[in-house]
Length: 210
Image 1 (cartoon, rainbow, N blue to C red):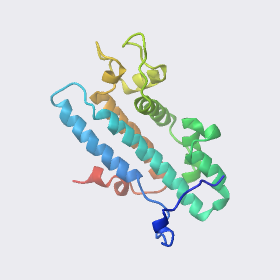
Image 2 (tube, rainbow, N blue to C red):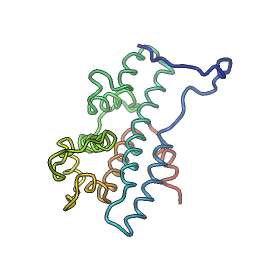
Image 3 (cartoon, helix red, strand yellow):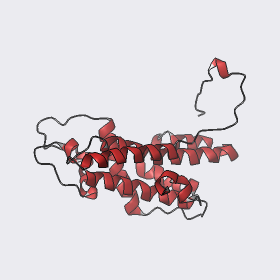
């Protein structure tokens, strides 16, 4: 099914020079800016409210990278449009994060290997659950010590320690989680940069800047 779009009336007679914008690198750069703010707060306190926007935009960077790659495929092969749109919009079987990422690995792999390290994938899935819990925040009633069950894997993989006297929000606003989130996203983006035969320094321009 073709995705519906609209054209503002002011642009109806204009001709587009580009097929789509590139947001993955912009999201990555914004996340690193939020990370710096978080680190500055850690100099004077245990947790930082900048950790959550950093996590959100690191995850957005990877998701945008996948969607940009899939969009590029459609520029040369419209026959895959229906399935690619389902993947991009996380419809049907592709609502499952693992399936979506693995299929993207097959579609975007120019090396014809399509294999994603399972540990890297599971780290990303755990981080995605934390991102979802942040965006769709819903307090667990009964006790501040009751953590959302979907964050159990996140708790273990990030190696965070529960904050005494605080709920899961305080626990996950810490530097250990921030470091884990960045490493997780960079590892999985690196996999796809390798699949795409792309220069890492080109993607992480700000990251590599002296």
